[in-house]
Length: 352
DNA sequence: AATACGGGGTC
DNA sequence: GACCCAGTATT
Image (cartoon, rainbow, N blue to C red; front, side, top):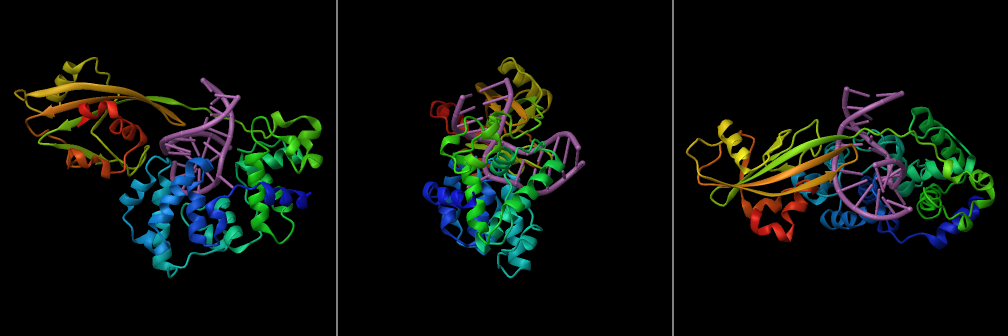
């Protein structure tokens, strides 16, 4: 059974750049990028990061804001912050040598059981089985395990099954093959069982249970938020701030944001700005509604309206806002929602 | 044990 | 709209 899996892998594997290196730094880059991220989406980021950083020390010496800018659009931004933290930890405490054993990797920030096993096996052939979404699916179907893969006990059970299934001294190939099988053959919907090297040993195929495995108890919890972004223009400058912790997009920049107020028209925005003493009563403002976007995240839906406020007086904003030339906004890491706005060709003349 | 954390692709 | 992706940290 294992032999046919490895044969299948050798013939059918995709040619992915992180498979051509044993450098734990590059493997780390790829594995963090690919957390909860499809290969096609992560690939251009991997290329970009490996072009910018040759080793862990270069990464550690970079500015976090520059790393976030490279990460822009990929989501789960804590990954980038944790990578920077870990790179500096390795530079300062591990002599700049990237560890390649599971026990040393698992203690690093941003590296959990999956990533530690991946780096240790790919770079050092350590006998640690990876358990990601693909492996959950392959093993649940193969063995007929109906445990909820989202539960703690389920994770433990599957990680034991995965480790037991890793027999020989070929962890690197084995782990890659298991994930590739899940990605190319044993897909969530419409698995390609007739081309599967494990077909003859598969519980789900035998019992036509592919649709019922793996078990994932879903938890949906979605909230809706109402955003207003104010794009001020004063003397060819605008105002942005960096988002803080305990909310989405930590570390990314954005225009002044007002949440939970619905403005029906420009006049209501004007009254609000006067009332909050952003401007005094005599101020001459040109307020224009630009557009609204619905932006969908996994756990929340954002309804964002954008207002352009051209003013002849400086708006009185909190000290955490920085003044930047309006043309330099593109140097800052911003959420995808704002990137979509400022790169919208049709809206350029209204924004800038 | 449950929840927060992005963005994009697929059906 | 539901599901899910080379998961981890926090509560």
